[in-house]
Image 1 (tube, helix red, strand yellow):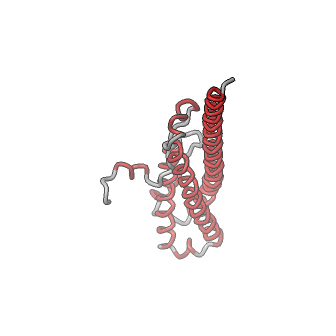
Image 2: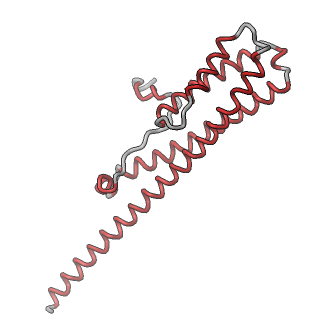
Image 3: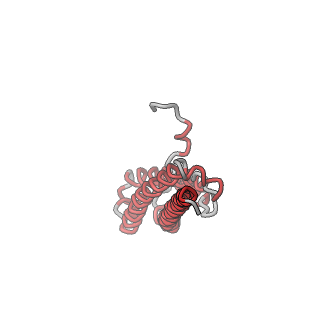
Length: 187
């Protein structure tokens, strides 16, 4: 074999090795990001389920004491009934936000009734649900950060060339307000 042919074979081999390395490194990076997203989503689901499980106890605890505020309790009950773990993430985000709004309304109403506010079981349930609300917000932030990293990664070279080959698609954010994407800039 001539030295020129040997040099050409070495150059082709080096290029192939670099391409294989880039594909493998990109694949591993995107798969790791996807696993982080799955883990972050599982953590959100746990907190959503815990909140979902606490709502009936809270509604039962205040139902007898809030005779004039049935619409507030109905709103919380309807939000809880709308929850489904099988819904797509944007739908779960909308339901989560509706539940949070209903809970804020319920807590504001409870503040107007000293006899409810002073009830020990109501106070402990309220504290637990407020803790879960804060946990959901924190976990949503982590999840959305992982989504951002994943979506940015599959939109960059070389991953964008591999995305269709491996079936990588942008994933939706867990928006507190799904309609926020439709707002004009600057609002």
